[in-house]
Amino acid sequence: MASKSILNKASLTFLENYLNNAAPTGFEQEGQKLWMDYLQPYVDTFITDTYGTAVGIINPDAPYKVVIEGHADEIAWYVNYITDDGLIYVIRNGGSDHQIAPSKRVNIHTKNGIVKGVFGWPAIHTRNRAKEEQSRVDNIFIDCGCSTKEEVEKLDIHVGCVITYPDEFMILNENKFVCRAIDNRMGGFMIAEVARLLKENKKKLPFGLYIINAVQEEVGLRGAEMITKTIRPNVAIVTDVCHDTTTPMIDKKIEGDLKIGKGPVIAYAPAVQNKLRELIVNTAEEKKIPFQRHASSRVTGTDTDAFAYSNGGVASALISLPLRYMHTTVEMVHREDVENVIKLIYESLLKIENNETFSYFK
Image (spheres, rainbow, N blue to C red):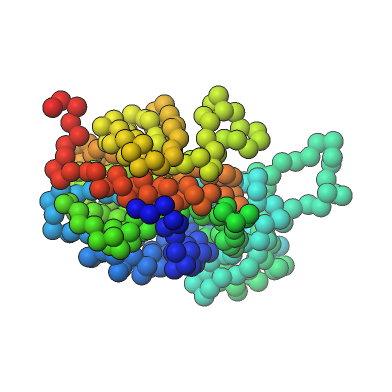
């Protein structure tokens, strides 16, 4: 492949639209429609499941099945309680960070569209500075400009409405992509780009390729858990995000030494099949794709775990995208890392042989 940028204008337009669209856990369908519309020219067919996981398939009749996968959902909040004074208390939908909530604007999703609101917080003048109260899930609240519970309900807001942040895509210093939901809408974007490159470069795979954008990862890998039982793949290469550990207040002795701009991160973990991982490492070295390594002691915490331990065991590996400020509204990744994850998945697929078992005993 040429060394020039693999992201084109259409790619970046799709990425911006895809990131800006809200797709909270359990409500991913509008984002999935955007993703399938973009992917459609590059695959033979699609399948979807009851909860909204979307799968583009190349060579659907092939018996040997290889998966590349990202997850579609983003963290969010639920309306949990509405006070008589018209204030809204929340509970998490996924791993939402209570510390970033105060003073954030929000979108409350109702059956009749979005209602705007803000996470209020007491002014600095009114707080006890000797003993300042920290934000917690039980004390953050949303103000949508109403003075009674009845006013809130007239806006079609009720317990169970999902709440997202409106923060949108931007580029910092020419090559840093910043947005909410890069975890892990960027994964869905990268696997779609792999499919595009396969089509544009006229590559014929000897196996079936299942490009999976799974739902509900943020609440326990649930979408992957469901779809792997449906597809019953032989191999799975998962992409998700991991932490850049070079920013303040992160201990490298615990979190490892990883940095945006230094390349994709190849995982070492019990769920990662060693022979498949070495195929990926060898591919990176052969194609001169920079990469980093990261060790997980028990689980990867990603959909890799769901695929690996399904269907009697599926050879699985994880290629991560280093990211700053995970689960905030300013998640940040490096454009070169995005392109190199795409390249590494693409080139690794071309190395996988039909009916390869990855057995340790042959």
